[in-house]
Image (cartoon, rainbow, N blue to C red; front, side):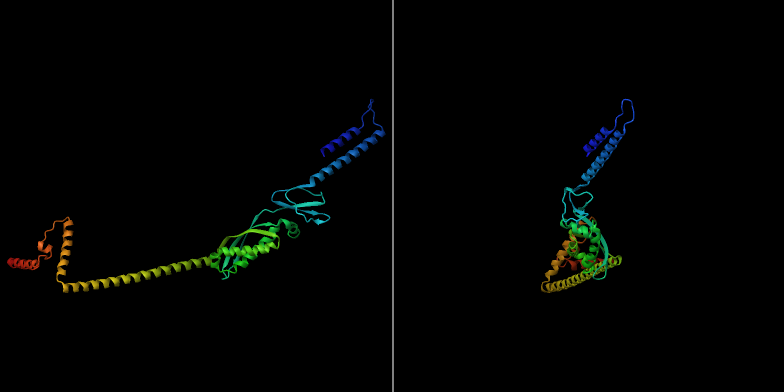
Length: 320
């Protein structure tokens, strides 16, 4: 194009008239030649401009992750889908429309009701992309912003239909199943519009404040009931312990009485044990204690108690 413009300017310069030695005006024949040269130069410039316009608009580039469809003024939409790289079209007669076929997110949050008539706010995130082979159909029926036209309504309808099948507590305990149902039904609906879904996830799930307070109250009541149950169990265990202890003491007393009846030496053995305990306590005490040997040994010498009582009685009578 630059070379053609340069040649046209050279032809125009050559056709310009030159002045004579006397500096007179050019003749009429010279003026006619100059007009013809100017006309031819204008035509050359117009042709060069048209050629440059055609060369510039006959090429377009499709970037990575994109596809193009072409509209023709005469035949309408072409059936071919053009891939990445440099492509050709006829200027003014054809226009390319480039689609992004990479995965893109679409988020929707809607308010709906559960099976037990509880209001639920659910948020759904969808990763989608168009089918590359069906871009011509998508452009003819949906246009360039196909996702804004179909996905919000489909996501809203499918989410409400699926949530209505579950109770409020099931939406929490069966969240994976709810997400799978939404994904399956949404993929089936989107396939009718030649849109592929790569992933569907529940990003938000909340209930009304009234329901949240009711659930909290229910949990508190259950905890109080569990606490009361454990208190009752503890009381029963304590009762069993007391009964068992009393039964053991009664049996112990009965066994001691039987042993005393059968063998009077049992009481002496108990006295020896008591004397040993008293002696241990007294020996460890920091106080000075003076006790009668017979009292300390608790009549271990047989008739020491009777002798001690007689001695004490005699002293009392002497005092009088």
